[in-house]
Amino acid sequence: MSSVAENLLKINRQIRAACSRAGRDAAGVSLIGVTKTVPVNRIREGIEAGIKILGENYVQEALHKTQALSDLAVSWHFIGHLQSNKAKVALEAFACIQTLDRESLARELNRAALKAGKRIPVLIQVNTGYEESKSGLAPEALFPFFERVSSLEGLETRGLMALPPYCDDPEEVRPHFSQLRELLDRLRDRTPRPEMLSELSMGMSHDFETAIEEGATMIRIGTALFGTRITS
Ligand SMILES: *Cc1c(COP(=O)(O)O)cnc(C)c1O
Image 1: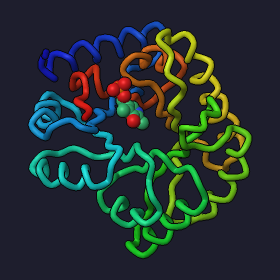
Image 2: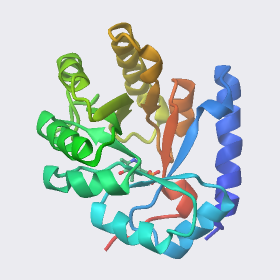
Image 3: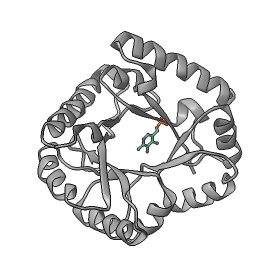
C-alpha cells in the first residue's frame, strides 16, 4: 500500500490540473479525508502529511478518533446519516454537519446549538439521483426546506452536499454535479446574504476531478487517500 503522503501528493496534482482546466483557483477546493474504517495511525499519517479536514460517517467512531488524535490540529465534518438523538454529541464533535436532510434533524441541531450558545455550520444534502437507498432531499423539496431552516438561528447553512449514483464513468455523474451547482446558484438568488452560501461538497475518489470542473468546493476522498477500506 502506498503511503498516505504519496497519495496526497498525487491527489493534489490532480486537483491543480482539474482547477486549471476549469479556470479555477486551487485554493477554492478543500480536500476532506474520509476516515470511515480507517485506523487511527493511518489517519495520523494523513494529518501529518497536511490534511486539514476529516470526514466521518459515524458519530461513535469519530469520538474515538478525535480523542486519539486530539494532539493534532484538524477539524472534523460529519458526512453520514445523522440520527436526531445524536444531534447534541455531533454538535460538540464536528465543525460542520454536511448531511442535513430533514426538518426534525434541523430542529434538534438548532435546539442543541442554541443551548450551547453557538451556530453550527451545515450543508443541505440533496438526493440528485432520487435513490431510495440514499438520504437527502429531492431537488424540488430543497427551496421550501431552505426557507424553513433559514429561520433557525442556531444553524448556518453554508451550501449543498450530494452523493450521486456510482458510475464507473465519471462523465455519467457530471449532470448530477452540474445540477447541484445550479441548485446552489438558484438558492443564492433567493437569499439576502449569498456570500454565506458558497459550498458545494461533491466528488469522491473516482470522480472528484469531474466534480471540480463542475464547481466543487469540497471533495470527499477516502480510498484514493487512505487505501481500500477493510469491510467486514
Ligand atoms: C465513503 C464516502 C466518501 C468517500 O468515498 P471514496 O470513494 O472512498 O473516496 C465520500 N462521501 C461519503 C458521504 C462517503 O460515505
